[in-house]
Image (cartoon, rainbow, N blue to C red; front, side, top):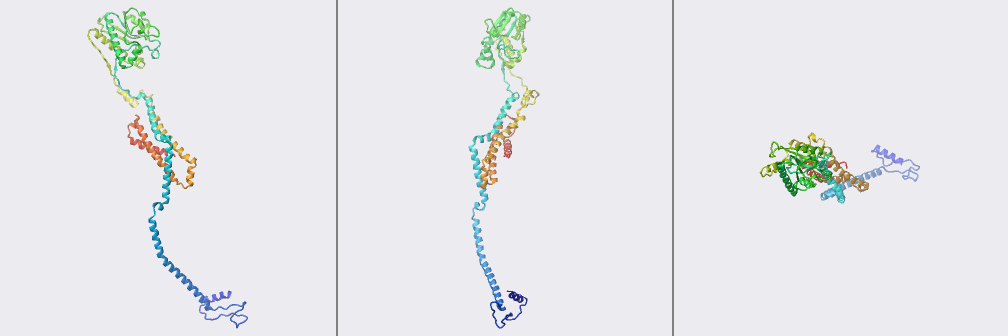
Length: 469
C-alpha cells in the first residue's frame, strides 16, 4: 500500500512518465508475478483508466441528476398552481383558524354569562334598578327635611264664628278644664241685648251651614264645643254669678252660655281678673255717647292669638267674631245684610323666593340633603352592583371554572371581552333607568338638565365603576 501511495505521488508530481512497467526488486527478478509474500506490480495505464472511468461515472451521474431536475421543474410549477387554486377555494375558517376559534369561544362565553343572569333575576334587578331607586329614596327623604322650603299654596279663608278654647301654659288645648266664655259684653240693656241676640242667631246659622258642608276644621271645632245653636245670657249683675264646673264647657251647663251680658262694665274687668284666660273677648259698647249701639270697643286676649293659629287652626278667630258683630249692628238698625267676608293673604314674595332658593337666613337651620348626601346615594347604588359583579366573577374562579377553561385552551381576551360586553349592556340599560328616575324627582339638578346628558354621564360613571372588576 505504501508503494501504491508513492506511485500516486510520483504520478501526480510528473504526469509525463512514459514507463510501461514499474518493477520492484524481489527475490525472483524474472517473474512478473509475486508470491503471496511478494509485492504486486500495477500498470500505470490501468490505474489511470480506472480513474477516468470513475470521473466519467461521476459526470454521468451529475448529468442525470441535472436532467432529472430539469424534468421535475414543470411538474413543480403545476403543483404550485394546483396548491394556489386549492388555497383560493379554502373557507375563511380554514384560512384563519385561530380567529374562528376565538369567535367560537366568545360566543360560548356570552351564552354562559347570559344564562347566569337569567337564573339570577333578583341580582339582575338590583344591577339595573338599584341606582334609580336610591335616587327616588333620596328625593323622598329630602322632601321631608325640606318641608320648610316648600311653598304652600295661598288659600282663601272664609270668616266663620268659632267658640272659645282654653289653652294651658304650654299653649296646648286644655281638655280637662275647658270652661270659658266666648264674648262678655256690657252694659246689658235692651239695645245691646237685641244686637247680641241677632249675633247669637246668625252665629248658630253659620255654624250649622259650615257643619253641613264640612267646609273647614272650624265646623269640627264647633261641633266638639257644643251644639250648633249659640246661647245668650243677658242681665247678669255680678261676675260671681258666672260659675264654672271643672271638666265641662260653660255653654253646656243648664245656666251656661256662649255670650254673657253684664249690666256693668266693671264686672267684666272683675271676671277677667278672677278667671285668667277664661274670657276670650270683652265687648264694651259706648252707650253713653252712642245710644244706638254702633260704637264699641272689642278687647281680645292676646295670649291666645298664637295658640289659636297653630293649635286650634283658627288664626282669624277674633276677626270672624268682629265681622259677625258688625253684621248684627247693621241688622239692628233695620237693614237686612249678610256680610260674607273672605280673607286673602298678602303674598310675601321675598319669603316665597327664600323658600324656593333656600338662601334666606331664616331657613339656615334647614339644610338640604342634596349637596351633602346626594352623591352618596348615587355612588351607593352603583357600588352595590359592582360588588355583585365582582362576587360573580370571583365565584367562577373559586369554583375553578376559569382554570379548567384555561387548560382546554381558553383565550384570556375572549373571556374578559365577554364580560365587558355584558357590563356595557347592563350600563346602558341601567343609565337609562337611572336618568328617568332622576327626571321624575323634583331635584333641581335633574329638572334643569336634559335627560340625554344624565344618560351619558351615568353610562360612563357605571362603566368606570365596573373597571374595578
